[in-house]
Length: 345
Image (cartoon, rainbow, N blue to C red; front, side, top):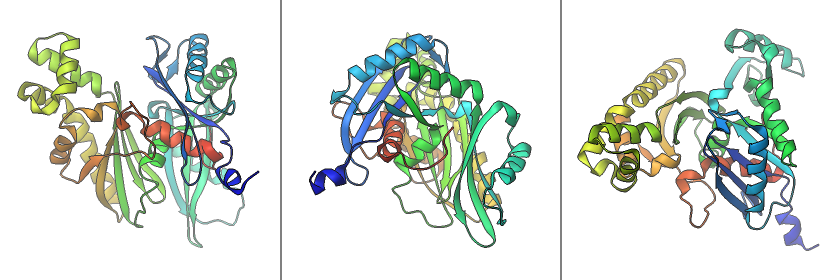
């Protein structure tokens, strides 16, 4: 085997991103983050997945098999997959506590989570990873999800002939694709706003990891509905107006601006909360998700949030696909390439 082949290596797993409306598969190999070896995106019929819940495991497994078969330029080289759960169905928290001498922090984390996480820990699958440790302070990233939900994803992958190796919250995948390549300063915060079709994730991230995530039901579909109502047109016409003109159309802009107000308000409340608690500075916002392609939405958010705002650029591009749609699956693929450590539900 040549030195180059040893360096490039064989991917240890591939990324599987399941949403309510589509499935994306991405496998990468090579140096640093790597390059695309396999990719596919297929639409998912309504009623198979809803708000992250798998309603029909057999049909979803069939769709996953179809996506694997559709991969180009190659099929995935492994049966192992790395997938994510929507933030509405998972919990993340950055715990910071006085450093203790015990080698395993599990008991300490369990006690902290019992008074922080709004669920019975007995009903959850949970994991953690130490992000930093000094003689005085330890920082730990914690994640959890309902056991039955994790089991449903695991069983569905098995039905599709695959092995679910890693399952993580979606916001961690998003952070890996957008933020981890940036050298953050110790007291610097960055926000990522992922505007999908049916939900929006607002994440605040520091060098230690995820500080806070908020999930909002206001997203692309809500913007389309607002345009349709304001202009008294059908959904297809409203969607076309949103995609082609966006905020350059006065009536569409006003309707979308009003609809997005709760997102802006949630962002400001979360920002103020974090800045009061920590000696940190929020320096910029990155916008991702399919609806971030709406013309003028970046400029609108920059004005509303009063902070530097730019489109998130993931590490991989796929010919024929917008980068707006690829951030989460790219973050999963980076971890899948070498099965790098981190929280795993």
